[in-house]
Length: 177
Picture (spheres, rainbow, N blue to C red):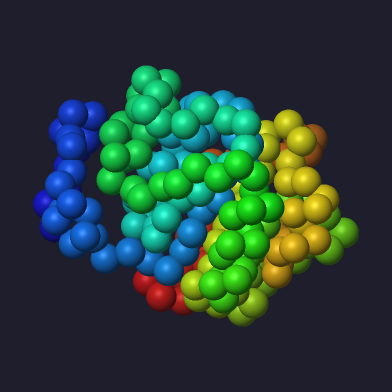
């Protein structure tokens, strides 16, 4: 497969054949009410970087086509299959009904360390990237299979949503790449 640089990606329009020929990893990404379009675009870049199966954009957030998302996604939003859902809970239930393991990234008394994720994750799986201000809603956390968190060693309570999601997805991929 030909790799495109940022300049090429910004103006690319993939054909159905090109999209079909991308070998996808058995991971889904659920974006849960992401506020910042920079984060949304960066999550699309992550989704493309690891060839995720599909992205779900859930709840109140900005969706493509959006010039702000396009700017940070560098056009990758055109290369990653995505679907809009009215709520994160709807996406979680749909995927669980298909036998997909759902992993939430959240600080919680029920969370495990990201270091333990490789032994507990299975494929196919979905990763929920939560709202930057409020995190993932409690009713969604009750439905997931695993809650995972990153250690926060400084004074800041949380890590940027796209950065945390990248760490977790690459940790899950350790077993197949």
